[in-house]
Image (tube, rainbow, N blue to C red; front, top):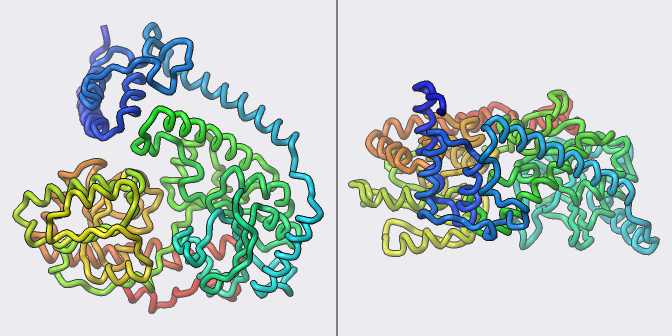
Length: 540
């Protein structure tokens, strides 16, 4: 007989089962099927029965055949595994066997990569690379600085004319570096990136497949080197030329994330299989980076939650001495707080990508749809701006509503800042955010965010400055919005508190100032970040 669990644990189990049921109903069919099979591994307990019913309801009672899933090449169907093991034995064999297999796989990969070594030299290509680097160094105005006073930024994508959205927050960071008096080189590395040198908004950039980065690293000992969104390709291009450099790796979320974090985005078993394989590759990469003799002196995370989550996802430990948390900077001069009229509590804004479900566009649709059933709907004015494969849900849901404007397009930073002046509430549901830059920008402008207490979000908001709801909970979001509608003074207090919170936590001094000191590249005697005098804080 299964032992009866204590009351508090049973109650927590019921809450968990309810949450799983709500989440499971939103899952795509193939993921439901994989999850359905995974539950067969659990012992027959009350918890399993509750979860089983939740998932069965989500998949409409449909049983999955072994051949229907990504596990079809297994000798024993997953549905039949583990039924004769105890719960402890199941957990033990899954964890220990997986860890052993990873160690063997990563050891073999390391040996293979070490045997390959760097690519062979091509004299003609090398000459072209040297010529392009000469041109770039002159363009950057750093030809006379060979004594290690320049900082090198390595990135996978950078803005250019016609591609203004390529890692724009990295560009904003570099603009602050330059304003502080630092000298900076920026190199874009990608397998199909054409060699070029150009200037974008005052920043000199060189691009290529990696040879340009290697040439820069060989030419000089930089004050420091940093990489953003580093993956296997970038690492393989630069790792042999980091000797003697002081290297920092910025961890934003995408580069060290486990497949389960983006569960809602998978539509086929093949996508699940590919995502798992990608996770294993990333786990191997970060083990190699961590152990490399000239690897990062610091791993810089955008939130403490992401530091902990990345360790769990990659199944390794970043030593405390080599870890740092620096939030992405919010430009409080652009996203400037101006006290809002109380009437703006009825003006709702959603600006975000709907390319995947991590950012909860479907939750936003549900919230707005259900607000239509309230007495406040005629007073509400909502504006939706964005694009992506899930954006059509906004268009179809609100095509007949005169008080909802839906625009399929992207907006520039300057336009977004102007839109912030017109609206009072930022609808920003989420399933995964390692920080939430768009939310913070809206808060800096005085908008009250409506969001979920998931992932890193509680690190940046609380109920004094945001309407908070548990994950997937549209009811709590609507209840919070109604409280704002009914209490204009509450809205005004939260608006001011939102701007103050961002200025204090993610403004230039808290972020760029810390970053410049960490990298050792500021050109100012006191190490001040730009925009940090008292006038900056007075804006909030």
